Image 1 (tube, rainbow, N blue to C red):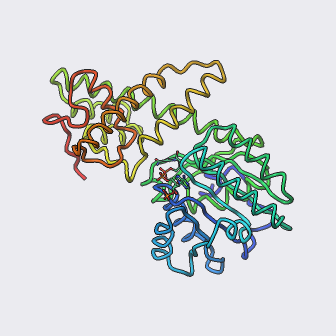
Image 2 (tube, helix red, strand yellow; image 1 turned 90 degrees about the horizontal axis):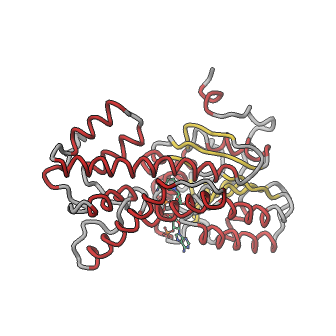
Image 3 (spheres, rainbow, N blue to C red; image 1 turned 180 degrees about the vertical axis):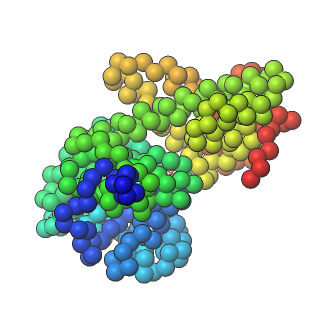
Length: 348
Ligand SMILES: NC(=O)c1ccc[n+]([C@@H]2O[C@H](COP(=O)([O-])OP(=O)(O)OC[C@H]3O[C@@H](n4cnc5c(N)ncnc54)[C@H](OP(=O)(O)O)[C@@H]3O)[C@@H](O)[C@H]2O)c1
């Protein structure tokens, strides 16, 4: 089987992607920058440059500079981007920002109703009801569709175009989007069907798995430190017994006290996701106590980091969500962000 048939659960669209298809990308943060850059680089040679927009314009300027003006172009406004594009991908911080931007899109669509198909692709991590709301808004305009398409993978995976892309929504739209995003931006597409909210629901379930795993890793490293066994043998055991890439990666970050969140996933973002997971558990009457515990440790960590920052004593402007180990360490009477002699020095 070819790589394409292994990684994309859809046959190629019967109508090949038109060469003149204009794609736009909104939100060039830690994830979005790499996702947009890879889409820009992955375009067919004769395709129009990717149109990009970001609140902080310097990130869009940087991207255009990196890939060249033939591959990406800055949009002058959200309205211009929406009017010009056949596909608009969004990757934004949280629910409030996503609703804000789709409100702006709606204004643009109302002023100039599209006469040909336009697909919006929402790739942020938001609560599934946000997707139902924006779906209702977008599909109230002629020829407009919304595909839910959150992604799994940290910024280095986005950089390497190795994300897992989850898709739900209108069949023909998600089929076209699957081929647009994989392999340009991701290594695999997962199809969650016609109900547009299901991809974001799976995203929260998947993140629950990752967060629960990080909570446990934080606890066992703290036991390692407190017992005098150290963090290194615990890390070695994880690598031998449970060598799952995300588990090992987050264990390495924790054991080496590498908590800089500016190029990872911020604690604010992590707490936003934990709140969504807890809301999902609540809405479904499906308790997830591990997430409650992790959430408490994240709040402790944010408070400790905030206090250190205010005192001018923190090494980090933003801490990564994996710094939740600070909650376990502090509860055990240890330094939250510095494991001292037990810090594991990574080889690369
Ligand atoms: N980081 C990860 O490991 C990861 C992995 C998978 C999914 N995600 C999800 O992907 C999304 C982006 O995450 P990220 O880590 O890339 O976050 P980020 O670096 O904080 O980027 C957030 C983006 O949202 C924009 N934004 C934030 N507040 C805004 C506001 N009030 N008005 C307008 N724009 C605003 C930012 O613009 P500025 O540049 O102007 O600030 C930036 O483009 C989130 O939903 C996150 O949950 C993250």
